[in-house]
Image (cartoon, rainbow, N blue to C red; front, side):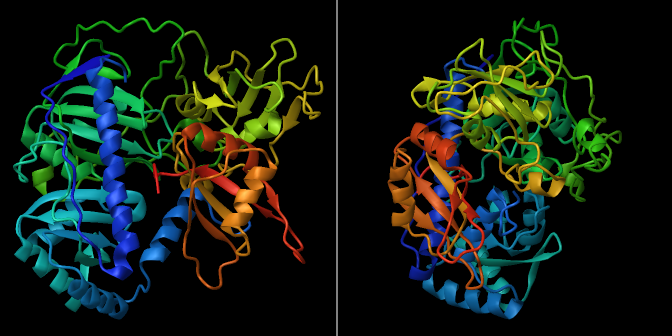
Length: 564
């Protein structure tokens, strides 16, 4: 448990009008900043209150399709000549700004790479990474520096981390940030870390091992409201600056647990207990609190947990190479150039429970929930092997997932959400497997037991497939994909009506290539609860089209956007 001190005023960003052909892109960049600001403020408010923190027919997955669809809607052409033409047109259509929008970044790029490549154009005072979009916003101290960057990028290739990047002015005159609004060059020794796509547990031990080799860490607080976020207090502002530059945009584990880092508003963290969610490294005597039946894990570090290696996911290896420049490293000669993580321990355990890949779900609606609908919801967080309703405990089911980490993700994101007016309770089961005994008929006529081990709708069946899933908490916006091009907004609304679920209030379809066999987009609902119910009912719905040989499987997941 932890509280924060020294919070400052909130700040609203202002954006001008974009050129017509770039309106979509700039609105999404603005929404990205707004979403981050809302998540940041909600998390900080939580701390201030003293709380603790199928492969598809088209061969694409949720996170990959959404990102690719948005990028196709915004940018076209990958050759230098096409990029140069775009930059020439864009620089004339958008008024010069000290903020430059950078696109075409490689997956491995971190903030330090942008600084190293672009500081030759002038002093950089802030960088905002958008890792999953392979984009970033870079704010220069002077508009002349931004002009040099955009002009140079239009005339000749500019490489960032070995890959050519493209530049144009942002319609924002300043990147919104939570602290020291009046001084764009100031920082803070407390960083706010947003962990995106958290496939594996994040603990204070994990973050300390990641951050401390770069700068001395004093305190860490982890909180969970909009996904997983953490605040890390360093010994000095300089240490925090080095850590932000070296780690912003990096993956803690290969292909997941991506760090998005900003300066936090609080200037100091106040930690009350040392445990997996908060730790004061200046006060080692703080006693761990007895968490009763809560869950405790040891730190999981390395390429991936060892149970994944056993299943053929590849050998573990070190991660997070630090930038070559010495300014991002501690002066100690004992710190290696590579943050080397110890191998994950297979003996991680929960308090009161041995690790189990079975989740127990209670609070299920007796007539509206069945095995298939449980699969539709839980498959977003891991493979589903079997689902069985318990005859002796009405409204309760056992869900056997691919491993204990999938159970952990399901508990993190689905515990206490409302589905059909009833609040779910998701916890670790004492059972280690689901046995198909006492099979009976549910109220809707379906079986109380179903085996999903061989279904193509499982989304974590391989390492490549799993890495493309962006793990998100439930939100009011659903991302839909693998839909035939002939399906319109009205078709989707009728589908909601036919299945007696709420209709969406906003609709967006991503631009698709002419040769594409499927389309994708976003659906916004009035509330998170409505979106959860629609996903539970319509996920994996079979769409049949006239003269079509095989149906299309409608796929849904929670979007990274909080609104359209």
